[in-house]
Length: 167
Image (cartoon, rainbow, N blue to C red; front, side):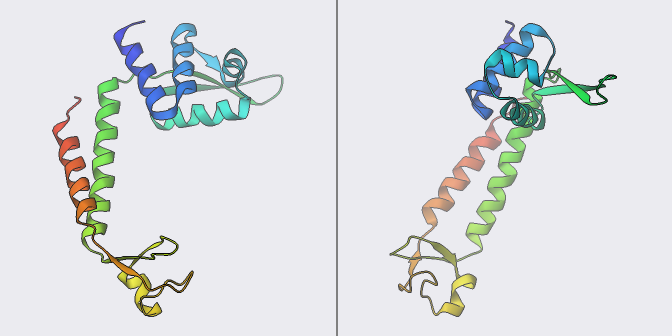
């Protein structure tokens, strides 16, 4: 197996689990297969295989071509491994992760939080002000949350991801 193939199989496995890695490895060996063929070969029920293939497709790790079955009138989907460069896929995932972390950081910076000591639920100031700082679930008086550690962890994660470059 080439280095590119190993990277794609490892990516599939890390992102979507061991079965996804096996799906990619199988597609690399056979070139192209239907969801039913993959399901039989790997011992996974066909609906689970279809869900997994769609997840792999959304992650840009596999592609498909659609062919109409003349006898039945249904479409058959032939799946294959993407021809995209794994570095581009990783770079896209890195950018999306940074974007999500930035939104979370902004949310954490712009809100004051309170936690229920009884049930552990976390609320923003705006959510809880009308309840006179009592938990709407159990009635306990809420404690203010110091989110400085969460802010620092988010900033560190963003910094580390920004340092990574795959292209």
